[in-house]
Amino acid sequence: MDKRRAWAGERIGALAMACPEALELARLLSPAVRLESALIRTFRLELLPGSGPWIESRLWFSPLVKSRNVASILLHQAVVEYLRGELTELWRDPAQRTRLRTARMLMAEVHRDLSPALLLEEQVVWAAVAGDLDEIDRELAPAVKALLSSGERPGLVAWAGQALARLPEAAFGTNAGQALRRIAARADEARDAASGGTGEVQEMTQLLGELPRVRIGVARRGSLLQLGTLSPPAPHLIPLPDTAPRLVDLQWEVD
Image (tube, rainbow, N blue to C red):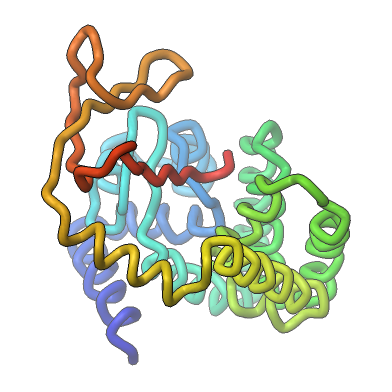
């Protein structure tokens, strides 16, 4: 067992001892990219009948969680992979398969308004759990076609790069999955070339690391993310290299 899997196993084992029902809930939810409170509640009521709402809280604040906000939680990727592996084993048991099909149906229903990209990821994960490589190919093929003809759609290419880290390894045993991996790799190479190559990027990173630091304000106000000296004062400050102009790298997930 590698260190990453062992690390995930320790966290999962801790929750198994503290609250096995919360772990079962997490396992059934693991194909989801993000676990919203409505999804968690639906799964508990439908798949763990008779269980109490406190189980949701035990999952919400468990060591399996990487990040949380008022509406949803995100599990550690190593934990997700571990739990999905357990789901795959359960799918091989005919006695469990009907329950897992119900879980897939419930997830699709709750997430019917989810972004197409994230909905695609969940469908691919469920297909991988079921060992259906043909379905994975069918699900990913339209995305690959869209990427090949995307032109000036950097958001789609960015999603492909993020999806590589989240999709199960089985997805890349298909023709469409291999094509997706190649497209994302070419996009990375193009970004490196546009920025002067990885060597220059590393050199610049080192130089920036040697500069003194300044702190600038960060605030989210409505749909805007504001940086700098703000009025009213910003609730958060972040350290930056003392350059002119200031350099900030922003990253976000496609919802």
